[in-house]
Image (cartoon, rainbow, N blue to C red):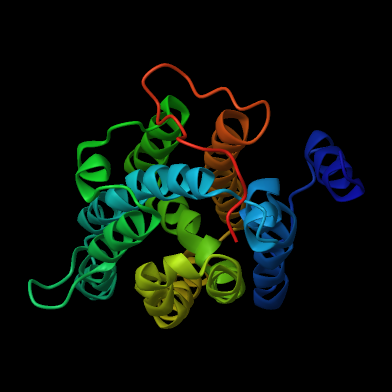
Length: 263
């Protein structure tokens, strides 16, 4: 337990009310959580950005991550439906269009399918959910359940991982081009998110700050962000265990065709 948490726990035990954080302190707390807990530090991503993953490992990543991507519009539809504020719904609707597309321009889901194809897998495999890790299904469903059952403030706060995604996406595009040039036709998803994510995260952050009226609200928002970070980390844990070390994919999961490094 950190010193800060000990102080908070001690104050709570003594019945002392916690003082609401200032806006700057509150926002800084989100960034502190992201620096430590966001999945940019996960060993699977570190290997990816060092050019040390095989084609099969990247196939497993793209396939399993597609399952997560496919549930994002569903998650956002749940959040939108829970708000009685028309202005909020109008702003949040953008997220669904970004991922589902508008019927003319492809959205993030279609772009991720093109990434799956660039790895050498058929898009039908992703669409049908063939080979998805059980842990991926559990983690993704946990996210949908979280935004469905927790207060709206926590549901929105869980999306604030987007505050940290910009640097990761920029690095990923650069390294995927450098080390895995055969993926070049499948990188449109990341290029779009470089502009979409900052807009989304700015709206969500302003909304969370405005609607966190007590210190308890602020602590619940922090907890929601930590929970989302845990969900993202758990998905990569499953990939690492199944396809890196010890390399034990469970029954029914995608089975690598080769294990040699591809540059």
